[in-house]
Amino acid sequence: MFEVIGERINTSRKLVQAAVAERDVDYIIDDVKKQKKAGANFIDVNAGARIGHETEDMKWLLDTIQPIAAVPLTLDSPDPTVLEMAFKMVEKTPMINSISLEKERFDAMMPFLDGKECKIIALCMDDTGMPSSSDVILGRAKSLVQELNKIGIPTASIYVDPLVQPISVDSKKGVMVLDAVRSIKAEFPDVHITGGLSNISYGLPQRKVINRTFVSLMMVAGMDSAIIDPLDKKIMATIRTADMLLNHDDFCMNYLKGVRAGSISS
Image 1 (spheres, rainbow, N blue to C red):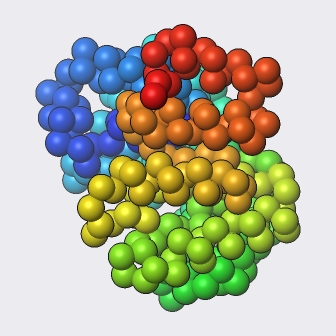
Image 2 (image 1 turned 90 degrees about the horizontal axis):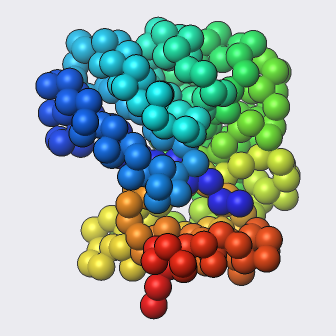
């Protein structure tokens, strides 16, 4: 089944930042409950936007969210110190967002991850910049999986992000990432594929239509997770329907549940 990582609890969003600054428990709880009801399998928690307050803000968010989340959390920070504190607070096995092959980030994250039971988002980025071909994406994915395996992270706990890029800049970027996903899944059948989808439509009109179409194509290629807004009913309906058509929904139960709930409609 496709896993949705709910992206809304991020202090880069103005309303969330205001709620965190004001310690507005009701706003955060309401948002998390809505994400869970809409079908989020993980709740991403990012407190990095208020410079100088990340540790205290992350702690407050976890104290607020954890009692009502009912799903695992994705701990989202580039700072291993913040992640170490957050990791000790969570009750369910968390997802860590994220590691990459960029030397500074890689060197900081590997000691933190060593020996931990967690899922990890692995970005196909290194110090040379964004990947320029499907072969480059595959090569970076191989390196990430191999290095994470060395410190005890099983392949099935790795969520590779192939880094979706805008087709408005280069119309081949969509095909490039689709080819890369197919190659990664052929090489590592147990690895997960995740990432943000909205970059594909950057700079184009009717972006949500593009995003919904693209997620279907990515699911056929092997994507089984995405970092999205689960309150976007149309993309959630697209994901649940595609899951059914790809034989990932036994007896169409999730699809039928969505239809009965009104979240899937024509």
